[in-house]
Image (cartoon, rainbow, N blue to C red; front, side, top):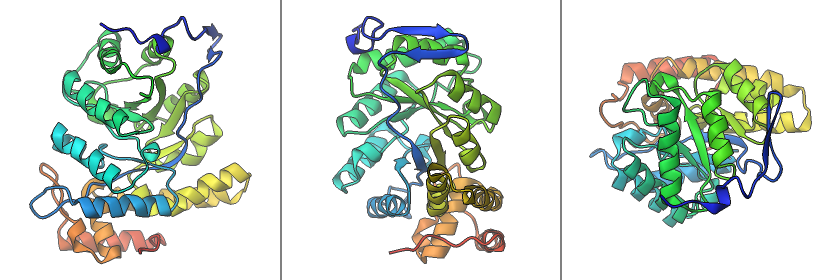
Length: 331
């Protein structure tokens, strides 16, 4: 196995100080702020609508997103083959979406697929990748999880690779423990740079942010955007940003400026999330975009997901409008 010298302990002095895990020259997390867990628009034949995808990503960046987590859970990533997912990355690259704004999901059902997809993401200039643990086995040990992440990192062997761990035990049925994070940081301090925590457990995500300074922790839930920022986190990566990126961006800016209005806006964002979560996010948010943009072509989803019918769309829109939701302006 090839050793990545730039990640080895010879190059970075690490020490444990109480509950803190410090590095002397570890590069701080590059990504911070508001990221959309971007939807993947589809044509009626369920192939990727490349033109709509590029347009949506540009719209999100224009309306407050600091970056885009494409090909994640909300983006239906595991319903696509590796070649299709590489095609999505190449489509975004060809469409002028800046690579340094992209955090594509690259965790697959085998480490060779993860290596192939991650390597292509790095080649195309992605600023980081969001990597699920190997979710196809349950009850695996930290040793096994460490070996899986290590195998990917060592095989790619590229100093440009920046990995964000994806903690989503409700979907993956795999826990990313403090012990695993610490072991990965000790071995790959310049590669393992952060985590998206979609567990819904605020105590867990805030403790990770406080225990590992410089490790960029993102909330996967809109509810915790402001609370996590106050506890050392760096931002959010959420599905609801697909329809409310401008509000999330205003919260982030108000927090940066010490503006007390952030608390009120956080409350408004939570109301929108509560309304939206009455339906599965991928289908529901696509339906909301179809309604508010006037583009019914937004509605298809890939099996096993099921698109909302007209009655469900009416119910969702009523719920959103009842909490005062208005979309960012469409071009």
